[in-house]
Image (cartoon, rainbow, N blue to C red; front, side):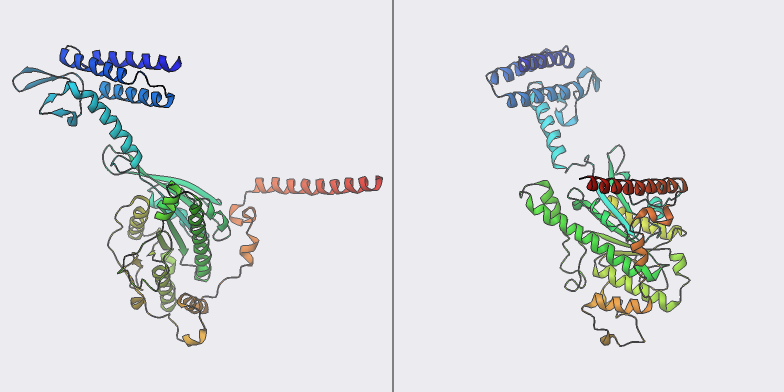
Length: 450
């Protein structure tokens, strides 16, 4: 009975729409009435509830198209028309309304809209990308992100893992593309949280931005190595888990599309190890880096050039105190977040900020690791990356990991100090200890009684 009422209600709506849209046009009124009756008679013996619901939805959608997208034109004088409602241009042939086929045209319009929403190929579809920022603790990630998003607000220390988003319109009166932006705080101490932004849903449109503090070179290699290893492991885990889905599943296709395919003429294609998703390495605090000795700057610059090329990443040195550098950094960021052109600037001069898009460098241009006080062959490296690491750490010995172990609990991190909250936490810790002691005493007494 409920389905029958829906059908009768739809028929009434269609007939009202026919009278409103084609008023005073007997030819169109007759054609629409005949078409509505024909469709009803053709399907009146349908018994499948599912099929009936689909036809009711189609009829309702067609009614909406007829009511909102039809233009009735009256010829009132030579070269002069009077418009009453609206009809898309693609529903007009030779300036005349095709009344007897309008139902088919409206139905085709509905089907076109539904297929367009499903395949995502139309210009009106919203494009969504994900960008994951990680890197050196207090390395300027938040400041760089805010500048790239053109947000005029003071940066605050990142608490664990934070999410925001950016939007950009491709043109006038078009849907805005969306960039999902994740930022990992705490340097390497919270690398376990990497699994949150890197998922089956995000992997096909994911990019990674690694921000390394140029003013702290002793922590640079360790930060880079741990974070990239954790991110790569998570990407590979997500991709392997996708194999459990059936071949047609969207998640499976997303994971497969995340794999990077390099062109055959990519420099040193057989010698590099491409990061599984697009990667941008940002050397921050270039203003402080400029004060270093020339030899040290060369070691850092060449090492980062090697790493960027090894991982097929783009590389840029920047400073929030330089409008020019931030503008170029924003171009690289917008390329990842919204698919915009990243610019054609390339700078490999060690006396200037490095700006090297992925694929614009090569091992022959980078040269050998910069060392003069030791024979490279005596370092017993397993591979080129290991060799560069040994040379780099001879100049900038890595910091001890003791501090990182102590800060595994972000509640003990000095940058997150909150006196009132910390005092309350200490009080609750004391209460918990007292509760444990009382509970232990109760259990001992219970054992004695038994």
